[in-house]
Length: 133
Image 1: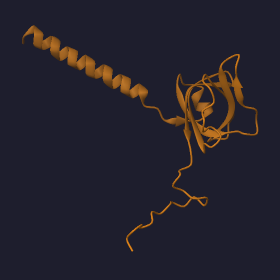
Image 2: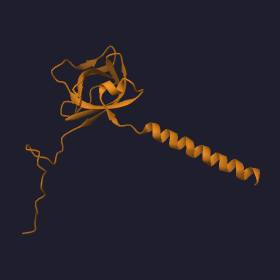
Image 3: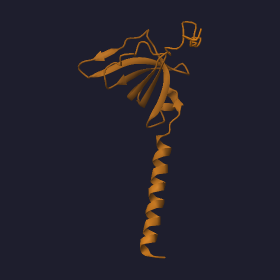
Image 4: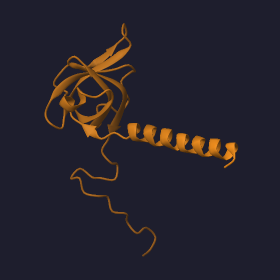
């Protein structure tokens, strides 16, 4: 075999291996706070605990609140940005980050808001046939 062909095959195999390794690390499942304690980066799903204090600190430039995960564990969450606009309306929150001590430090936060296509009973909105009479 020619040296250029061997180098090309090695480069393709190396690039593919690196791509698969990075893809495997980027896939994350949702965990609770207890499971997140053993991870460098975790996705925790839960709900905002509105019975506790929350707010944005001008000194530290951080938004802090308490969140209850799906297992019922409550932790303080520190988010390094301002409070998202639809924070209070969110049904569920997904925080992405890591736990240090008893505090979850979120790098990212996603809000799962109720669908505008559901009515108050949670039933799906049905599209009316307009102009077909």
